[in-house]
Each structure stands twice: as C-alpha cells, then as structure tokens.
Image (cartoon, rainbow, N blue to C red; front, side, top):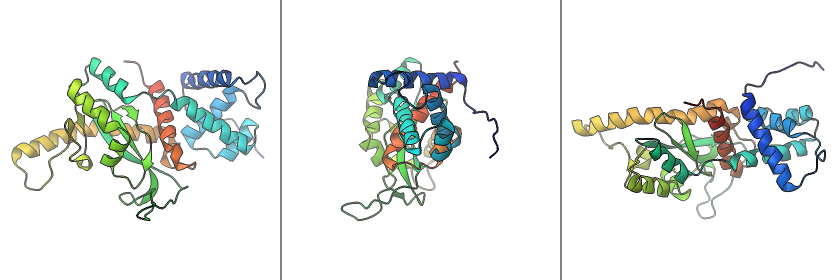
Length: 269
C-alpha cells in the first residue's frame, strides 16, 4: 500500500462552516466529548470529499478510521446539517427584491441516481425514470438570481415528473406567484412552464412568429441563458450531484446542502 498526500479543493472557510454546524449538531444531540470515533473536523472532510470529488464511502470511511456504516451515518448527518440552513424561497425573493433584482429564473434539473426503480401505483410506469433524459433521477427546481447564481432549490420529485408539475408540487410556483404580484419580481422560464400562470414569463410557442413575439422570445432567451448557468454551477462544483448513489428521496436534501456550500464560497461583492 502506498501512502500519499492530497489537497481538497475547498476553501478553509467552507470547511470551518461545516465543522461549526457539526459541532452544534453534536451539542444538540448531547454527544459527549470524545464519544465519537472521529472528530467534527474529520467528519467534515469526509462530507466535503464526498460532495467535491464523489469519493466512494469505503474509501472515505477507511481514511476517517471508521466503519462503512458509520461513514454513511456521518455523511447523512453532514448533509442534514447543511440542508437545514438552505434558504427559504419566500425569504430569497423578498431579499432579492430589496436588493434590486429585476427578475429571477426558474428551471428544473434531473439529478441522476442509480438506486431506484419504483412503479407508479396507478399507471405502473417507472416513477424515477425521465423519458426526456432517458435516465433515472429526481427532478429538482432551481431558482437563480439575475446574475445566474443559484438562490434556492426545491425538494425532490420523481424524475418522471414534468417541470411545471414539480414546481407546483414543491410550492415553488406559489412563491413565484406571490413574488410577481406583491414584489413586482417576475420569473423567467422555458417552454416547459407554458401555462404556469401570471408572473411566470415563458417564450411564445410556434413557428413563423410575429416579429414582436420573435423579439420577445430572443430577449427572454438571453436573460434566461444567464440564469441557467446556476444549475451548471452546482453540478460542476459538486461532483456528487452528477450521480447520487444514495436513496433518491435524499436528492432534495443533498442539493440543498450543495447550495449552502456554493453560497458559502460566493465572493462578497
């Protein structure tokens, strides 16, 4: 066996944030000092390596000096500690309006997974299979600010769920309606949200459009393009989001935890 040193591409401040959250969680649980096999710092490194590098749990557990079962427990604790601090969409929209945002963007993304094949109780089709992406996964809605930075993420819906249905089921549409009506903050979306309702601006469908409609579509497309990068920011930064090897019901918490980590690393303007 060859030993070697490695560097984790995560800022120290981000690691310190997670350590503080894990310390607070252990205090909340009444865990005594030295009662755990690994320290909060070691647990934080385990969690961050999983998110950043998608390192296997057997490797993470071995490096942390714990069993695989304990490694999984440490990982889930870290995910929950981070996800608990994910921002609420209503708060995000109110803060955005106060900061002078002109709009937000909303889009859905499929977080792939290799651990699900569940039949719908009525239709019998595979709930977690997305025909659009031809892959199993969970549908997560992402709201981005005008600069294209992810601001809020929804809970997970099965991959077979259409974007507009997922946005409605997770309560995102209701929050966006309120933002448009009360805060003057519209949401830009793609054609998959056509008919979503007032305040959700989507491109006009059809060919040979009137020049006014064509110009509107081009404008919406330019504004949304900047917003759509928010999903890429999450997936490119945290490799674990490329394929979840845990229970698919955990995808929502995992994505929320990734959002908290991403926000912690955002440069202060």
